[in-house]
Length: 265
Image (cartoon, rainbow, N blue to C red; front, top):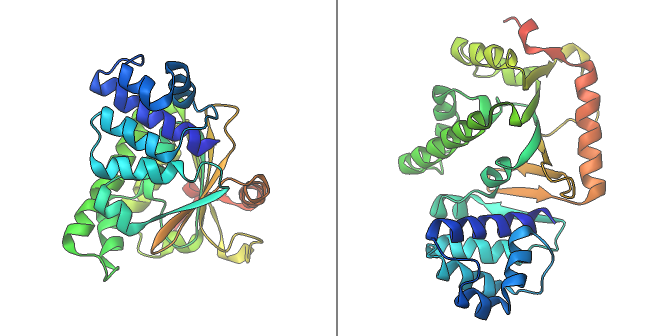
């Protein structure tokens, strides 16, 4: 359901930006009726195939890579998990996660080793990306800009999104300079952001051995979504059981965590 709604929203945004009317005869031919297109754009179930999605993208003047991504995502609408490779992200500049963040109501972010991307300083993220020997200087610049873009977009939403961050103490003691620690403590003072960390002495912590994000959406009919980041790809999980396990793990961690404002070197 989530990915179906997201593709519909992105394609319809493209239609609006291109100035094409929803009743355009080309849309009717491609979808069978204007009503079917309206259902598609709203995220309702339709029998449209991925070539139809590609044709709509062409009608609305999309670039080839965007069309390819929409077709690929549409083929996954009935899956409970799917992936996005780093190569696809670098070649297209299109990141499904960034798009999902624009419609979430709440973000629950857990990290074990690194500071969460939304709160990284530019110096911190550059040092982090430079550790990956498979990335060229050009790749690093693209990834830095994408992450800065993500930060700008979420900041523009302000209090419309609640952000809860849970980190292991390792993340605070591994590569965090004074600038980065100050950024975290400043963020924790905002009304819509909560930052906490799991101290060394309390561990190990059950089912909190790897980083993950849980996204809760503004539409009540959209299920929560889990995001897992790996070196070569990103994975999305939508299955209710999987989401429930990650949600429970996050909540249990918050119960024993400390505020980042208590952290001292």
